[in-house]
Image 1 (cartoon, rainbow, N blue to C red):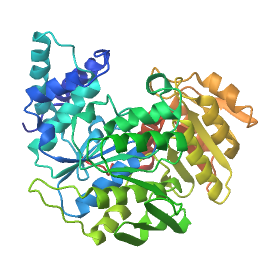
Image 2 (image 1 turned 90 degrees about the horizontal axis):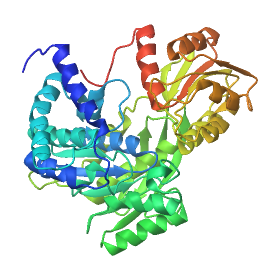
Image 3 (image 1 turned 30 degrees about the vertical axis):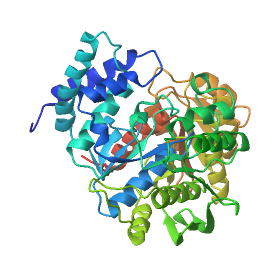
Length: 452
């Protein structure tokens, strides 16, 4: 299929989004049946399966980049996306094309209809997209796929794979209505991706959560490797240098040592993520389609050094300094706060927009004290928190707080107030950050760099 019109593509995308209202029951039966009708494409690639409250996207991006640098045909599956739906399904640095997406919808949709004719429940949107991605990676002959969990782990649609390694980055409070109201319960849901005998890598440090992961790994006979900057961990890392240009760390583990590993992503939390990514590759030793695996450590270094992860402490301009960060939950807001504390102090104007179903009070308490002025706005989603409520909360920490519901006007106002030596921070929901990234890129004349 060559040169399809935008109308055909939008129609395919509309069908995918129309499935959002389906699938109320938890479980993997729907996605397993859908995969079966598609010929079980999930069995034709090797996976590095990544979950966690925060950091899972960064680790997925680093693992994919390192495997690509090793010469493997590598898929990357993420959610959500920032600017283009197709970001969710990539091979190397290239998004799935519109033509390929339309073609695969033409295969997946009849399979869904067959499920309905069998009297089965309609799969959810995430299950449909995940099955479509599995089919794409299989057709394209991917050796490996860095596979990010959508939510939780145990009942996530991605959990029908048997990976080479399971990764649990962090456990903290988020989605408590679905995952549980204690760290132990949340850890149990995330530990649901652990498979019998498959190595597990985790950066979890909370004792309650770590105990749950340890117990589950022990029950399934899965070797567990902990990652921390503390000596007691199986894999440890140490900071060598840190600046706004990037950071350098040393990573040590059983049988490997990466000296002066360059981490381009900003924020000290990315040091831990880089160590987790390295550990996943080293201890998992995934096999490619021919049953072999060669890990060139120089290529791993190169891959991690060139990792891009838009919208997470992303510097879009230096003068003025414009930073985008999707600090969408308290742990993410804490990471942003720590990062801002480590930078030279600048007068800071912040455009802030948060979802109504997130812990907006905790996030605001962490972000607002770093700001001189705040413009409360509304992310482009029905789930957005009323900016008047957000502004009222922000005024507890900052005197100058204004409300502009239209995020474009809020960004324009923020740019107007930001001098060359100041900083404009756009943060909160990834829905806001994604829309802001598109808008600012257009204003600054920047081009997309993550596929076509």
